[in-house]
Length: 563
DNA sequence: AGGTCATGAGTCC
DNA sequence: TGGACTCCCTGACC
Image (cartoon, rainbow, N blue to C red):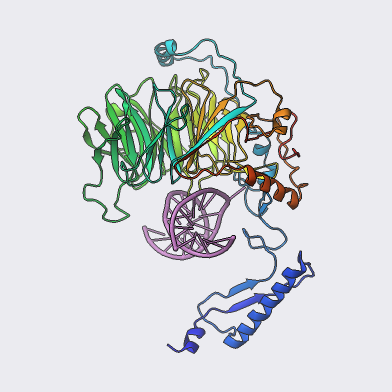
């Protein structure tokens, strides 16, 4: 083909000149731009482009400084140092409503904004009475005081080569934590004997979505994977068997290959419940390792079932959530397509839905519409949630979906932990804290972060017995514990560069980052680089009492601390 | 050191 | 209905 004919098919190239007198920030840039402009002009002439091209939209090369989000001039979106400046033309990145940006969003200023606190209930029907009689022995009468540590220490391990997808504490060996990753590897780590770790790499061939302990033998675990199999692995030997493969004919095409996502066990009946990315639920008898009955469509056909949870008190009650924007309640004794007891509607994909850990009477869901929803009683009105708490946990590529998790130790069932997507400028570094939220009031109780952890922590689990938080951030796992000595003041510790866990400030500063010069930010980043402990694959690094720092407590203002 | 790729859901057409 | 395009991410691999 002759070059001339090819050229004729090119769309028109229009170069928009900067018409106003706005000055560019540096002379160098100006020169570069001018040069570029000239070159393009030359090209235009050489190529002989005119305005008579048909069928192709013109390519506009603009030399104006425009917003990368809306392509309009007059403002610029993106990170300015460690603070993200929103495009004012877009809805708020936090609450998704138009009219303001994230910086001025009322939900950012106070997480409890717009949340109606839980009411003291007096109305009781007979069903509720029976349910509570069943629960009574399990509920502690006296609520222990919630103590938030001033300082926490952190251990970090990196034995996964891909992002962490799930975490599970051992139900009886309290120092052991299991982790799964995107590659399908299963990690076993003793976080008290930090070098005691094992990685089993040959169980699954891709994403290990959920891990569940065998309720009859805590030496074995089940795994549900996107490779379409359920595994049963002996933790000591690493020997694994496949309980089920939902793709008996192997990989045919991406549109037919089934992946397993949600999984839970019904300990009373010895059943393993798993669900796939096409909306179906499978039931497996864990004693005979065989599928029971046929797959049942529990979510919209073709949509992923992201999570399953059996009620801790009445395990026949199943909660599912999925890509069809619904969470659903089921009675597994009468399970068939369309037979859900309730449908809990959401605006976006539901990443997780959990019953409360002790009474099983509350429901907590995390949805991609940046809202955590709470239903105070499964015996009450489930038509709409009791509370919606706006919290930044957007979905994004290459991130494990965020899941708000209950504190299994909290008898009042009001504490949840969830990682935060949106970053805050902490002393010149953009950090993504892990939030402790009172889901009865919407208040942010505490936030945990570390300047060395610049990635988000979408996976979090609170220990069933101890004051320990486990987080999966990218391919690393972090264990946070309160330090024994809490006597030192925050200010003293900040001076010493020691890690601190901060109580949430009552009122957040919505501005105040802007006074930082680029130079300050550069210095701060450089400082972090020098203290940063590089965690290579298969290495263990302990951050005890020396390296890490954190601030923000009491009167220390976010982003305002200067050394 | 810097570019490329992987990748999932929403939105627009 | 399906394809193209976009996104406050992250890390491995060239």
